[in-house]
Image 1 (tube, rainbow, N blue to C red):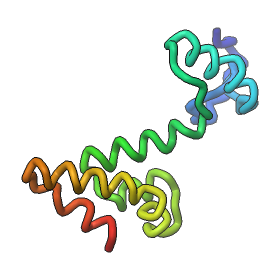
Image 2 (image 1 turned 30 degrees about the vertical axis):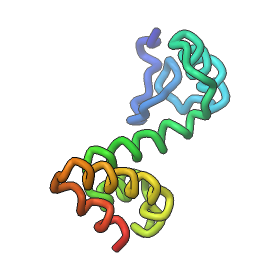
Image 3 (image 1 turned 90 degrees about the vertical axis):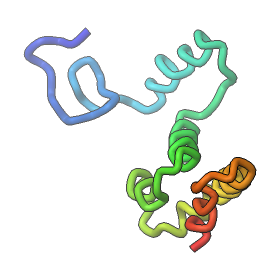
Image 4 (image 1 turned 120 degrees about the horizontal axis):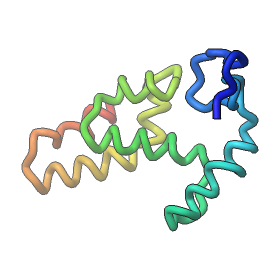
Length: 110
């Protein structure tokens, strides 16, 4: 419930009921973990969502430079190093399918 007249628009994805920064432990304890339980999912760290998003983007063929910028990595080699297993899996799958995305894994290496 948003409190009228008290709302501060800080452009946050996750905010308190008045638009201010939410305490990260409150977010995890009061919102995230109960959602995992409700969805019958295993316990994961909130930060794991970041890795999942990056992996899914790379698997779908999104250019690593875009993923680097989205994650806020200063240099692309950080992104490539963290997600090289993903690139190898994508490359193997693409090679099996004879698909043009077979070059995706090669682009990640360079």
